[in-house]
Image (cartoon, rainbow, N blue to C red; front, side, top):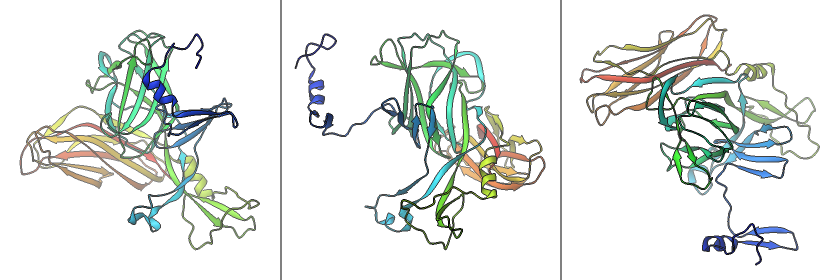
Length: 409
């Protein structure tokens, strides 16, 4: 093999082993591989026309001519080698993600501190169905144009989990104290209750150089965590059901509800396929995620009382009547191992969630959450998170409390 001047004079054993699995077929003018190919970065480019990307929990196709991201309705079939999946429960119903109207922002770890460096890494539980568009943070180290930044998301609590997203950036120039807004290749979809670990690292001077966790500005209320402002849209998965239309137009699609006792047909060329949501269904799409309210208290509170003590209250302005989702996330522990902590969440004085947790070890914190969807009238409303100890003793502790409420229909 003759190599041009830009290539090394000889190949390493690893390069030779790689090339053995690729063969150029002159008859088809194609490069053929006898092994599966996996790209670590989350996108594959199809010429200059389209990009296919893993967007955490969705597959997204981007039209590079218009820079529009398309995500599609999907249905599925669970692993049929498992007996429990061989009946109707093995079918995943047809559904699509319906986005909220407006882009929103949240400082997930609390406000930015005036100084202080920490590594950009940590685990979180996704509090609601959300499509994250980008992040903003402040560097605490020098960034040169030859440096490469890596943003990664893993399933689980650390980097041993499945890598579900990775993106790199380079050709950036920043001094410590400079704030950077990073827009992701595509929206990153996360679902309520999903445990993820995020990390941002830096390779100095070369993409293949050793990486170190990127040093960024810390949070003022959570000084061991990094400050980050996330831009996002809420979304809801709405069912799509093909059904027979008596109007003579052929097949139709209903959004957001199941249609029972209607004959389903296979779609063939010539069928009239229409997307015709009802007025009520259009309303669901247009108002989902609106009226968003958020309140947080990252500090630690303690009590030895056996009656509920208020940790955090979210009082809304006057809200239009509708169905709303109220949610709470927080961390709790007890300074004595095996002594329980009781938490309670109420909406307008009515309890919708109560939880008990007894740590195995003293001061062993655990993340907890609760949510409910309730019909609210045209008025102000109050979401309250409370906690208490029990007659078994010990000091109950709670921190990183966050409350939110938004309209779903």
